[in-house]
Image (cartoon, rainbow, N blue to C red; front, side):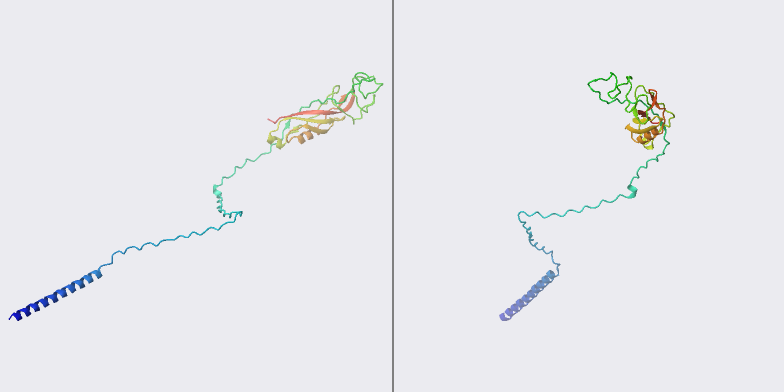
Length: 253
């Protein structure tokens, strides 16, 4: 009777343990399924690798050698301005050539002085005479003309400086002096001096400029050579003289 009771208790214990074991296994299996079904969590980033920088060693330059030349930076060409950006140059107004107008001319006597030297020793000459004069002459105070024998007329080839005792030449018609276009454009004014020879016929020759003005020298010489004067008289004779002309040029108003 007691044995049957003990066997029943043992059989009850064994059944309970089986059910407990099955429940534990089922719980473990469910836990494994639950864990495997969960999404993986964020993984930790890998640690960065250490970077090793290797610096290349510069070439060693020998002592005394020049340093390597550095390349020059290329300069960019400047863009050319467009045609529309250019400002047109101012065109000067056309110059209208005006006809030259005559100018006033005033003549003056020769102001040159004699440069003949006089000896300190008076000798046997006559006071007031010329060192190269004639011993038998009785004329005093008359200008000495080389090669002119007393009582003869002048040959016309001897040129005397215009001075006292001579009749001044008178202009026979005035062609006038015309301004050149260059002188008008430059507005040239002033005084010119020219030295010419007035022959025994009244012609004006051998003119040369002593004091000139820009763009007017040739025009003045041409005008003087075209003039005619009355011959110069000296001691009743017609002589050729060296005459100085003073010309005052003024712009036409």
